[in-house]
Image 1 (tube, rainbow, N blue to C red):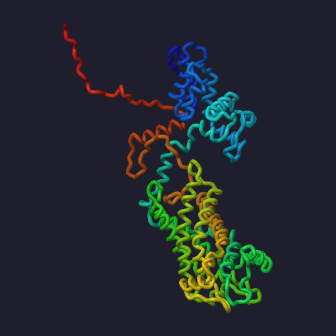
Image 2: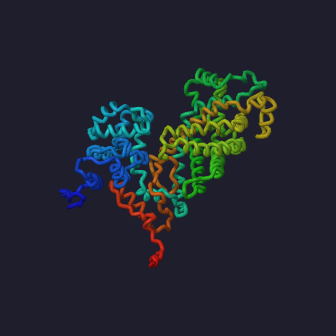
Image 3: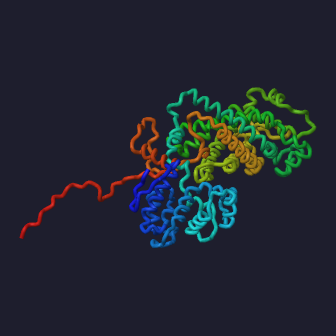
Length: 545
């Protein structure tokens, strides 16, 4: 096979085995064409022209702007063939450069690595030449003259990753919500699947923070005034925890855990499933949702759980409080159920609605927006980021609804001799305000935040990671942060609607993906202003004098 050149025909003995080699050979032929004197060098301006024309797809905006500077700083500076090859090899090896940097910096992206440290680490890989490393630090120095390299420098030089290219159009089509075309049974299967994962996540979160929940319950049930002797048992939450450990032992922190697990598993499952279900209905085609819809989804999630979990909640509270009187008879879950009866199990349900609806209406929107703030540049979220988002969202949600939680606790706890009894939510509010003051409504706020914040953090991170690990696709919306957000390089990607049949935009995305996949650079012909067809203007002949 012959390739013509301005100087002489050159024979290629073997066809390059890969598209990348073919594309590099194209660049070498261009170098030979620019090398008029056959000296093995070209000017910096010619170097910039070759790279911008033939290897444009491998240049970031920063590298493209600094091609002349990288070649020596002036248009008359000469670039050798070895430098030209090393420069192209560096661009092809940027993924390996990332790997070498990660061996030195680990997860700390702000770590600055010296040239000597990088050379020593690169020797273990054996694929990076000293000239490539010199060019790497030369390019990094064009932005910051520190003589060191960090992750930002690498990203500034590295071409777009494979995952950012438009040949992921098929993946975009797959991720596009197909709610309108999904059958009812598939949506029901998705809800059942989410319910199962929510149950596991809820049980995990509840077990992790149950001791804090027990301390919170006892602090909220403690009356500040009253005729009951010895009523003021605990000075604060820490004193309560210390006395539980001293008089009831370690397992005293887990009194009532079994009914709590039986209740919290479906409670969190219902809450998470309902929130996801309502959010899906209000989520638009571009995976966005307005804030009022987020609040509505959270409120519906909080309301849906109360009907199922209120009986289990009241049993849990009475078992937690039972340990305060060590001389009394041992109280079990079935004993509490028999004493209360069916309607008694729903005592304090109004207060539960008063607490759980605003809690979820605050929590889930804050969680979603915190996730968006903590997401990486590519839109992904790790386990630590999910845990942090869940914990942060729990702080305002748990603290702001503490008064409702205090009222609920007072209504559900069995009043002992000498204690004030309450007939309902309003009666409870009035009596607490009159007898104990406004501050009584905020009892246990610290313990509640310390319990709810990490509990929901553990619950949500478990729920999200289970969905990622199992990766069951029901054709609905993917959870935010579960996948990388692809950044297409074609300005106008084709439509992802079902009735799209193709056209130029689809072809543009396809060819751009082929270029990146195989390391090619296909010629693009754009009509210039001079080449556009203009109406002919009659030429007038000059008149003879």
